[in-house]
Structure formats: structure tokens, C-alpha cells
Length: 117
Image (cartoon, rainbow, N blue to C red; front, side, top):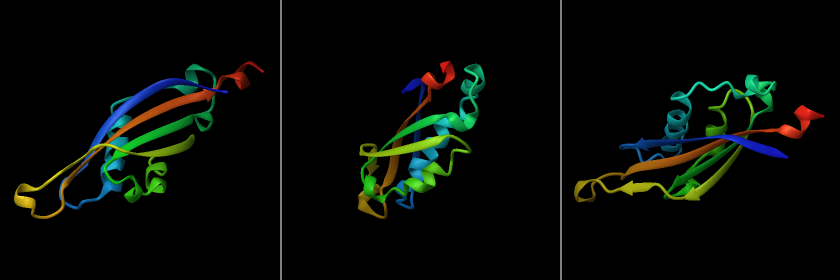
């Protein structure tokens, strides 16, 4: 059974292109790039053993390419859950694409049973 040990949060945006995937990718990078936590080593695991759950909130979750988000992670098994959330902020006077804001929660855990057995 996977035990969650860490949760990080991030926010990203697509200012003009209306790109939900890009906004979500920037939110993932925001969550990752602010931290340097060596959980795998701390618990005696290989980094490949990480179980990563990524929850993404955007107004149009069907427009997000989950494979692009998985590719941000250099190791671990990544599950992407897309949810309706975030914000679409209209441009002044409705001209052009809205500014898209994505939020993510990134959870990292390990199968702790395996470490004991």
C-alpha cells in the first residue's frame, strides 16, 4: 500500500495562447522547482520507486495532455487526475484568449510495505 509522504502545490498560467496544457505544465514545474527533497534516499528507496499523484485543476480539463505532464517527471510512476478548477480570466473587452490559471497538488509516496519485507 502506498503511503503519501509529501504534498506540494503549484500554480501556472498561459497568458495569451489559451493553452491549458502549458498552464498545467508550468504549475507542475512551480511545485517541483521550489523544492529539493530527497525522500527516496531518506527511506532507502530508488527514485524510480516514487508513486506520484498529480491532481490538476483547470476550467477545461479535457484540453490538457496528461502525457506532457508525465514527461516533466524524470522518474517515478505518475498518475494524472484532471479536474475542473483553476480560472479563466477574460481579456479586457473580451478580446483574444482568456488568461488561463492552473493549480496542481503533487503527492509523493512509496510502497512502504516493500521496504520492510
